[in-house]
Each structure stands twice: as C-alpha cells, then as structure tokens.
Image (cartoon, rainbow over all chains, first blue to last red; front, side, top):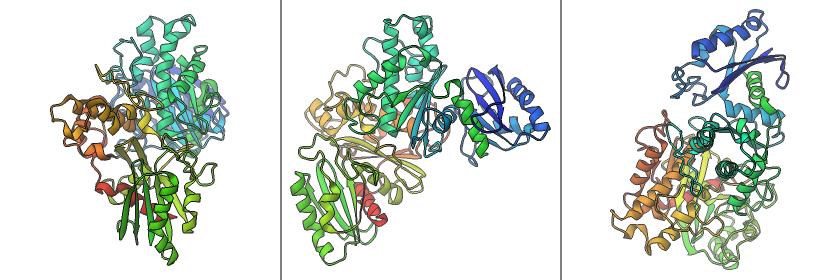
Amino acid sequence: MLGAIEAGGTKIVCAAGPVPGQIHARETFRTAAPTETFQQIQAFFGPYAESGQLEALGLAAFGPVGIAPGAPGYGQVQKTPKPGWTGVDWLDGLAPLACPVALDTDVNAAALGEQALGAGQGCQTLAYVTVGTGIGAGVIHQGRAPSGTGHYEMGHIYPPRSLGDVFEGLCPYHGDCLEGLASGPAIAARWGTDLSSLLADHPAHALEAAYLAQLAVTITLTHMPERIVFGGGVMKTPGLIDRVRAETRRLLGGYVSQGPASGDLGGYIVPPGLGEDSGITGALILASRA
Amino acid sequence: MLGAIEAGGTKIVCAAGPVPGQIHARETFRTAAPTETFQQIQAFFGPYAESGQLEALGLAAFGPVGIAPGAPGYGQVQKTPKPGWTGVDWLDGLAPLACPVALDTDVNAAALGEQALGAGQGCQTLAYVTVGTGIGAGVIHQGRAPSGTGHYEMGHIYPPRSLGDVFEGLCPYHGDCLEGLASGPAIAARWGTDLSSLLADHPAHALEAAYLAQLAVTITLTHMPERIVFGGGVMKTPGLIDRVRAETRRLLGGYVSQGPASGDLGGYIVPPGLGEDSGITGALILASRA
C-alpha cells in the first residue's frame, strides 16, 4: 500500500491506495499545530505501518519547504506565517512510520497528478495553478518538477495594478503581490464575501480575472507550457476560468503566434481533470517513486 | 574549426575558433535584410567551408524563432517586427555552408556561454538577462536551456507601473510590457538620450532599476536560479546593477529566506564574466555540440 499526505495551509488529507489513481481510504482534518498534525497522521497510517503494508509515503507539502534531497534543509518547513510550523522537519515527524518518504510542494504534486492522470495527460510541460488560501503554481517538465535552488514561488509575482484598484494587498511579505491581491482571503477582505456569492456582473469578477491572467501570462512567458490547469477553491466560481482565458489572450496580444498559447486558449487554460484530487494523486505518485 | 553566429536585432557577429572560448577570426556587421545578411555570413564562413575546415555552426538567433529540433518551424523566424525577417528559414540560408547547425536563441546562447566559461561557472541553474534594443532572458539548467513549447519570452512580462510613470510604452504587441517600458529605445523615447548620459541623480536611473528589478524578482520566483547575469548595452550604465540589486532585495521582502536569492544579492545579480562575448561563446558551444 502507498500512503499519501497532502498538507495544505487549511487542511491535511491522508490517503492510502495500492497505485496512484486508486484511493482505498482517506481522511481529512484541519491543519493544526505540528504536534497535533503528526499525531493525526500517525493515527491514520499507524495501522498500515504496523501490519507491514505501508511501502512508501508521498508528501505534498505547503511551501516554503526544502525539496532538494541531500541539500541542507531538505524536508524542513522554511519561514512561514503559519503558527508553530517554521523549522518543522517533516521527515522527523514521519520517521515513526518507518518507510521511505518522497516529498514535493503541494502545487508540484498537483501538477504531477494532473499531468499523469488528469487534464495534462500527454503534456511535456504542464503548469498547475491553485487559487485558494494562497496562490501557487507548479510546473512538470518531462514527468518531473524542475527546480532551481528551491521550488518556485510564482504566487508572489507583482502584477500591474488594475486601474482604480487601491486595495493595499495583504501578503505579509509583499503587500500587493498577486497572492496579496487575489487569493481567497484577499477577495474576502475586499468584498466581505467570496467571489461565488457576488453576482456575475459585479466588478470583482473582472478584477480577479485580470490579476490571475497576469499569472497565466507570466507562466507562459517564463515556461511556455503546453497547458495551464487552474484549480483551487476560488476557481470554482462560475465563469471565472473563461474570464481568465479571455484576459490572458488580450494581454498576450497575439505575440505568441504559434502553439497552444496562441488562438482562443480553450485547450490551454483548463480546469483540473481530477477535481479535488490533483494533489493527493500527485502525492501517491511521489510515494510510488520513493 | 567551429563557426559561430550571433544574430541580434542590431548587429550580427560571425566568429571562428577551434574550441569554445578561443576565437581566431571575427567580423561584425549591422543586421540588414535577410538576403544581404546571408551573403555576409557566406562571405565570412565560405573560405572555411570550401577548405573543409568548418566542422559545425552554432547560431544564437534573435527571437522569436523555432528552436525545437524536429518540430514544425524549427529554425524559422516567427512573427517579428524586423522588416523582411518573418518566416525566414535560418537552416535554408546556412545550407550552402554544408555543415551541421545547432541553434538556440541569443539569450539562451549567452546564458550557456556565461554558465560554461563566464560568471555562471558551477551554477546548476543560471539566468542571463540582456537589456538593450530589446529585453530578453535565457535560463540554463544542468547545462541545457530548458524550454516548453518554445523559448521563453520573459522580456514581455507586465511589471507594475512605478508611481507617477505615465509613459505609454513602445512594445508593438503589448505597449507597456517590460520591454516597452525599459529597453534602450524606451529609455531614448522617455528621456531623449541614453541612460549613461544622464547624471547619477536623474530619476531615470531609479525608474530603470525599478523595472529591471521586477524581472529579477519574476525570474527568481519562476526559476529560482543560482545566479542572474545582467548584460546588454543598457547595463553598462555605471551604478545600474547596484540599483537593480538593491531594488530586487527590497521587492523580495525577505521572503526567500535561504540560498543565493537571500541576503545582499551581491553574488546573485552580477555582470557578465565574458564582457561582450557571452553570446558568441555560447554559439561556439552550440557548434561544438552540433
């Protein structure tokens, strides 16, 4: 049996299955302090480990986290606003389960899941964006998540401000970076509710699409993927992905004249094929490679 | 003998040498119409080809250009504002020289040159930025330029506008994208002269640094390189690289807390180690691999 953990900023999903794409058991709990979280993880996987069934674990972890095997800080949570989590060592916390662990960021794992079994099947280069509590993006190139000295942090790019938008942004590091302007909490702070609760002609929709399209443009110009999957809670807003597609097209201005980022972008900016399971599926794939 | 061609928007450099890093002959001419350009290239390399000395050619070509061997459009210039160049096939034009040709973009070649023999030696992931007639950036990861469905076009990201800057930008596709706001021609259009001619306390310097720092931030968040080399004519302005470094640090806001993009960035944002020869050196490396 393979074990998978998707550790997000809001909730943690544990799952077990024989192969990626098949989940036999799953449990979800709110992201708490590290000690409580490791107890819950231990409670879920303990029986599999004790019976010798648990072959490997795949961890899709919220960032920033050290993902380079062998490098200093591997498996450790870096500076994060989440109370109690800075410096936590995932590998230490999972050591009682006594099996190999492979880890990557939550967005890289989601990209991996979508590339292997979801909306990105057949793509040599796939990007996955999540728009929820935070904004993040992962890239899979030829089946692997490339990274430089660490994982990418694309949600923190600075987009041009939309005309008349004076919201100061709420990223604790950057103020009005993309995450500070367009994440779920930013939407709630601007409008006092979530995007799906606002009528289709409310300006919040166009504003959100304008900012997310800047991320789509930046990903296009910096990675030239075959496709970009847009997932996460905010993307469930009806019509939002169509608006992002139209605005991305407008911003690209026909400059990319060939390939998937040209034309109407209908097959370029797409919703997840795995629904809520992009990340946990990716974590199972990580486990299968551990 | 290896042959190298660096084809930029303004000038074309031809060089011949026995190994990358050694240039025995070189000639530079202004980028003209394709027919004239191919005649000049033929005139330079013809004698080497006829005597059987020319083993291979490396081409560092201005973009957009097809760089995926075997894919449709390989070696062809894509839609470009340069008169007469759209649709030109480099491989057809170089066919009379009857030797293997390897090609990449000018910025990828420059990144390759700097990584192998310049300021990026030892870097697993290196970015090279040029700021001149246009703005472009290339990335080398483990000795190769990664690419998705095509080469990157990072010079066309949209940066946030600096406070009070109402210049409309001059990119024919995007208006106020980075290239439209901060390339050499944009500086000339704003101020009527080049940056080096303006006193050190002229606001043009801080403005230029603010825009270029946005590119450094975006490259950091999307590729996490070990180092970013800033080259090109505009970067020869005294003090500019220091301003870019300081502004990048301010914009990152301490978010990248480990690795080369943390701290004072003194070893992270650096000038080319090969001076004017980053691109032609990369083209020689391409030839050596052809």
